[in-house]
Image (cartoon, rainbow, N blue to C red; front, side):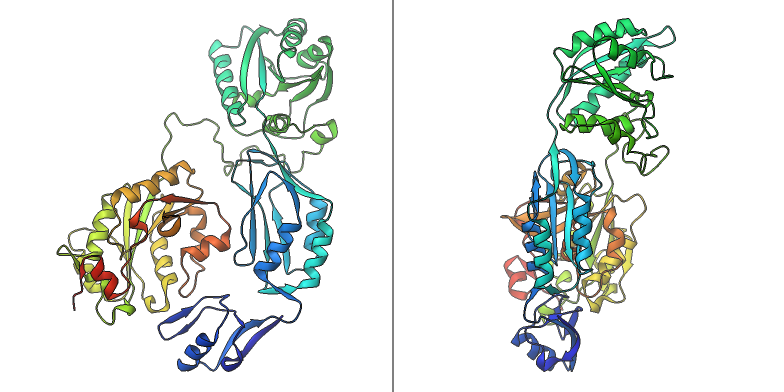
Length: 536
């Protein structure tokens, strides 16, 4: 592949390296220039453009990424279509992710232009969660490099999602005079919550004295009818021959390992009675906060064998204590607080296809379109609304008189959509978990449509992009999670949310909201059809 500036006259078939404007036309990075594009660039006075030119034997970024992804062997993993040189791979089921790290390293060593990134080995994943991505860095890569990667993948499983299997779990809690019944009750509830994520359930519970004999008797009885036993000791493990490991042996079982290099979770015990795995739970497992107990529990429920050496190898990355970024709180709130979605109303465009009049000031049933849209956003569940102005900013503000909406002005509105997105998202408060991006020229959009998108965002845990669709085709509005706000700040030119979603590889939830997602008014004909009247 050749990369660099070339005369526009020679650019047909080349791939644009940067977003480029030619009069009213905007060409995105990665656009393949056709004859009409070359003519438009020349007419706009451009003498040269920076492009990538494929050479014989090269594969374009999408074709290369798709070929590598197709060569990979994996289980319970869904491969998404290639876009912008990237193929994302998602979990086909909830479970535990395993990966051949040596194979991933070997692929990444072939050439810097080819990259594979995955979740950490033994990460717990949800169905639909992205577990890996193949990304081609330049616009094209030599075909022989792709063939090397394909050959490396032959006959080897690179990664897998090991699905959870619903297990029957028996629980034993030992009792001392110092242990309150409320603590035991809470432990049972927390354990049931932990098991629920895999479809497993606690089918029996026994409370015994904190003595090896009593625990052994209960464990031997429960092991016959359960896939897994969990034992909570009233007193923490103090010795490798303490009550829980001694009870496992007394029941005719074996102890695989006592103690683990994960904190919290140091005092875990793993053993077996017959075919039934037995977990001596550390005290931290009485809390819902992630700890070493979760790591072992999830692997067992996913059917993965765990040896003493496996537990001994958990030390690197095993320091979990007091890490505020961990997603699970120490205590779940009594009433979940829904994530706050703030709206960004984009009203900065020049309406260039209207031939002069500003479409946002067109009257719909006697009301300016931008005001009609703003009122509908205000009537939705959105926590707050900020309006982005640019072209004819004073007239837009006048049309919104009385609504008392904060305004973010995009002085660079002529360069394209990216500036307005950046201005709007930057103006949102710190409490915004998501940004509802609403175009000002969508006359059929209703508050109920916006509420459906916000509800879907809440159900997705405020982590996914939520996109409106109509008839199976993507449209607008879209909700961007806070995790993408930093990426918005790097957008340039006429690049919008669609490019951001594709390039960042985030999960996307599509929500069918009806005609409101599809009707915008970019031309005089479309505006008249929708019932609008242009104003000078």
